[in-house]
Length: 289
Image 1: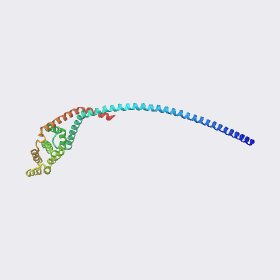
Image 2: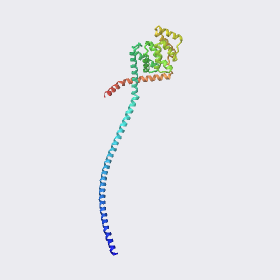
Image 3: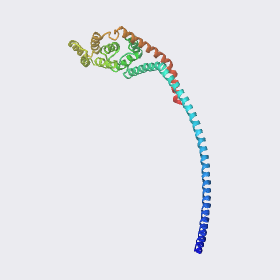
């Protein structure tokens, strides 16, 4: 029994030494791996730290740049607000005057062009027509540039000449006010009737301006004998009887307001005319840039 126990003990101790040695070896290897892992971890940590510092610097620069950009935007916005205010102020003051002047100039230019294109068939000059428009403005309160535009339409009816044309201009204002329609529409209606009285008188009857059978017969007779002016006089006399003085005899308040508005428009046209040449120079300079 003793021999057997000894063998067992020796075999156990030898086996235990081998296992212990193996364990020490494994532990040593594990320690080396751990050291290597720790070194790699440290290296990674250092790299991450450097990257984080770099990111922090970049973020700082970015926020600093953003602050400057916000300040720049604020400055630009304030300047744009000042510029917008200035433009609105200009538009409501000098801008209105210049636009009024442009309207007047455009009306005169179109009138002159129509006079040329019709060969001055109306036997009236631009100066005479502008003077007539100015007098009718004072009488009715209707802006002279509006009257000039209407005269430009009436000029296209080349059978209307001289004093007939002047009386037709006044008649158109009366018809327009009395029937509540714009001057262009009235100019076309009256212009057609005077340009070809025999046909035109029927057209006027259809829009509510009646003529007697006697008047129609006389108009037809004059037209057939080429006495156009006499036929036109019959039409104008009837228009005068039905609508004469309407434009100049509205209620006192309306006439006063219209005259005041027209006078103010003339004042703006005058002021705009003084500033217009300077604006033309500026516009030309900007165009050449």
